Figure (cartoon, rainbow, N blue to C red):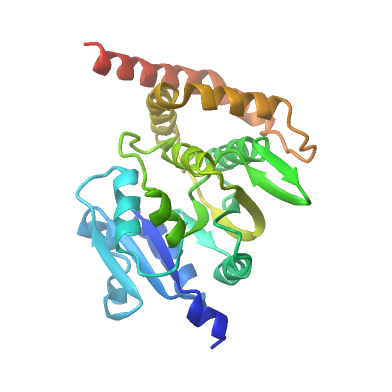
Length: 288
């Protein structure tokens, strides 16, 4: 085994909720990383989440942690507090890691000045319109929030489905996820707090995962409602930072941005309605 792998121990965290089939596919892609994996932490809500991967109970590199809350921020914090590696990498349960995923992360952190790196997610299901639209929107948003400095790309926002961070950096700045964000914008909030420390979020497209995203119309609408609800929390906490981020996106020099497909226009009015419903729910809860 490479000596660098011994000194750079990578813990991989997967937080899952009610997606056992997708979790199995994700876990298999991580186990396939071989010697590059120090430990895999699966944070689950109920034992039903693990029904497809019961055979992994005997794998000494895999640990299972239960989180009573369905809040993704709480689940990620469980992983942060219990991981034993020097690097902590996060991947979503509906993603599949490229076979060189951990190897590329290790290579990136050989640069001692790198504290956090975000990889790239590509659509894993071209046959599913909802997955394709979701990934196109996410990629458009992240690409338009990038800036190039000395031939390297840095992000103004963080997408937590594929990123890695030094544990020492987390400890130094006491960084955890804000549990006020239920299942959306917790990544943007976390990224803003990383940037507030003076660190840069490096982007490396070679750290690649395939994302299978939303699979049906109902899940798509639930996602839009959650975006609307959590955006209000985000706006209340980071109004000034959001305005700066939007301004930077409008003046972005990134000319290689691929806009969302024209097909997303078919859903834009429905999406807007459900985001508005999310805003209304937030308002009623704060001002009954």
